[in-house]
Image 1: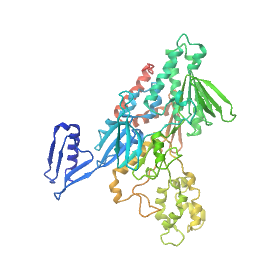
Image 2: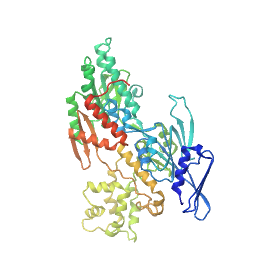
Image 3: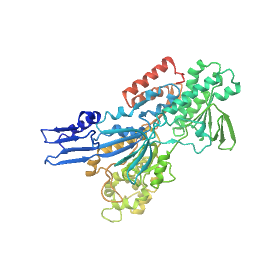
Length: 583
C-alpha cells in the first residue's frame, strides 16, 4: 500500500487534534494512493487506501488486548513493533514498577517515584497504536472474545464506570496475589511486600509509626518491646532482602533518631523450610544465616505460621509440633504467590480447575484457547512429556517404516526433538552427553540401530528433568519479549514456519517454543554485602557482589529517567542517610 506510513501518521495526528478537520483528503503522487477521513473522530484500527489498481480497500487491524502492566505486559509492549496491530492496555496502575527495588522503597533507600515509569511514556515512543485504560478487568469472556472492565478510580473519584473491549488476541499478564495459605488473620493483620509500590510505602510508614509510638512517654516497657518486634514471614529472596534492609535502616539511621528505644528493636525471620534462600546454592544459604546471626536477626527455620492475631503471631515447629507465640508490632508476609480471583474465574470457565496458575503450552497459548496467551506470574507452561509422544516421534523418524532407526534417521529429527522437548537437552547435559545418538550408543554399546522398545527405554527418564519456571521478573520479561517477537513476525511465519516438526500432525510449528535463559539471581544481605548465583554455578558473596548488584539493577531499569533517579537516591543515602519522614 503506497504511502501507508504517511496515512498512519495522519490518523495519529487527527486522534490528538480532532478539531482540525471534518474531512481530510491526502493524495500521493508516486503511487496514486488516496486516503480519506470524515467525521469528528477517526476510526481506530482501520487503514484505508486505494490499491494500485484504483479500487479502494480497507484493512482492519487485529486488536490485541493486554491485561496488566507488570514485567510481562510492559516487556511485550516495548518489544512489539509491528504497526498492523491495534493495542489496548488495561491495568489498575498507569505505571510500570521496577519490583526488585521494592524492599529498598520500604526502608528509604530509594524513593517510590524513582522506580516507576508512566505507561503512556513507554507506549508513546512506539510506532504502534496503543490505547491505555486505567481499569480492572473483572471478567474474561472467551466465547465472545470480550473482556469486561471496571474503573479503578472509585476510591477517590467515585467512578464505577464499566465497559467491555472485544479482542482478536488477548494477553493475560495480570500477575498474582500473595498466597496466605488460608492462614487465619493474615489478610487482616499482615503487610504484603510483593503486591506493589503502595504496599511498600505502607510498610515504610508502619516502621516509622512503630518507633514513634514506642517513643511516647505513656507506653510501658513491655509494650515497647512488642511494638518494636518486627516479624518477616518467608525466607525467600524478597523476605531476606527486606529483613536485611530493615536491619540496616534501624542500625544506621533510626537508632540515631530514636536513641531511647533503639535497644528494643528486634527482627525475626520465620521460614517453614530447613534453611532460608533454599533455592540458592547451599554456600549462600549458610553465609546468609551466619551473617543474620551476627547481625542479631533471629532466624526461625522449620516453623509454620498457623495464626496471625492483632498483636501476636503463632507458629508451630514442624518437627515437634510445639506451638509458640511471639508478640509483634508489625508483620510482613512474603511467602509466595497465588492466582487472582479474576484468573480463578477464567480458569473455571475454560475447565482448568484446581490449578495454581493458567496452564499454557510452550508457545504461551492458554490451553484450549487459540487466541489467548498468558504470561508472567499468572501462568505456568505445561510442558509436554516425551513419553506421551514417544510412538509418534519414532514413527516420524522412521520414514522408511523399517521398524528400526539408524544414525541418519536420528540426525534428521534430533534437533526437532531437543527443541520441542527441552527436558531432553537437560537430561543429556546431566549425563554429560552431546546428543541422543550418544545416549542410544551408551544403551546399545555397539550398534545404534534400535527398535521402538529400545528407544522408549533410552528416553524413559528424560521427563524427570521437567521443572516449572520460577515466578520472577526475569521469566516474565523474557516471556513478554518472546511473544512480542512472535507477533512481529506473525505473517512471515504463517508462510514460512520456523518451529520444530509437529509430531502429532503434519508440517511444522509456526514459531520456536519459548525457552527461558537464566542469567543468575541476587540476594542482598545488608551491610553493603550481597550474594549472587550466576550461570555455570558460579557463586559470589561479599561487598564486590553488592556493587555488581548496583550496576546490574541500574542497567535493567526501564528508562534513563528512572536510572538517574535511582542512582541519585543511592548517592543521597550514602551522604545523608535514609529519610525517616512519615509521608
